[in-house]
Length: 424
Image (spheres, rainbow, N blue to C red):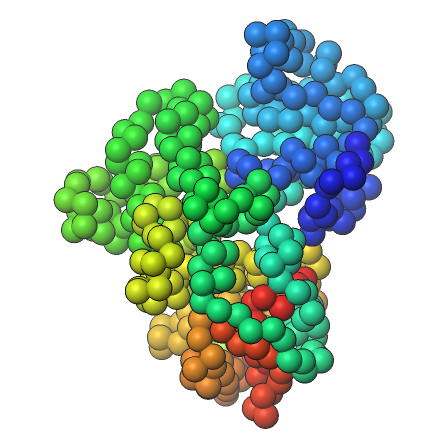
């Protein structure tokens, strides 16, 4: 259902490819990230299960007979399918019946438990994770430098426009929410706060109708925000809540609540690099913690522009989260994956892009241009350590910077690229 005012997303090409390969595609992701708008753009008919018209007539019809809501021109969008979990099996059965590709697009902002679902849908329903907008998608990156080109070891050196700290703070507080891009910053800051409240007030119960301690869930979210872009353990999250908020919560409850946040797409952790390095270097297996958008962490910290200007340490972690959100979106658009590297010799790379052909590239993320030299030295040191131990080193190295006005390759081979010039 083509719309003239539709703003293209990097997911568009992936969704088209999936529709050609599978009978149905389920587009998942956090609320308000644009799932329905994008899916509607790619469909020819639709039914909104959450539509309140007629006393939620669509939902009642789907509950009465799921197959009745599947009729329509294909691809047919079924929005918020998890409101009626039986729809999953109905779609799978319909796909099996006629065997054609691209019949349905399902969207979901929560992963329900398996109650009422009999089959996984493997081979029939593909899952596709959608994220909030990257800076390139929202028009805040010039897109003059390609991440894919960096991974292939080539960029054109160029002078770019100046970037000030206030603009980077704006990107963090505003976030990648499509509805937030044209709002004044003061008003834009309300959306992530309301998002969190909506999740706590409603979604955590609706996901499986289990009543949970809202206050403790909020404390855990605040702890996640304080530990954004770190590899903190569940036990450390528990201790963090005790030390800062003076509240007791056991590790089992922390794990259970984190699972709920994961099912609501509120978190989007960065996995540890698992390439077969063929070396004795031991790699830590801790995930790097991320909320699904840095604006959520900023909202939970009650971070204002003035506060972040006076707390560059916190700003640095939030800027790293912003960059890693974008790197993940860009990498996924060409079938690559985002990881992080951390070994037991205290060597770390902020980000690793693993390519489909087995090659990989290492990245450091730095807010200020004065940190570029140290970041490049760190990347080269780790590359040499891996290779000297018989491992497969990275094919390219890059420093992603906030306050830099140029994209270039240093004499030591390390690329330097501003986040406001990056695209897929």
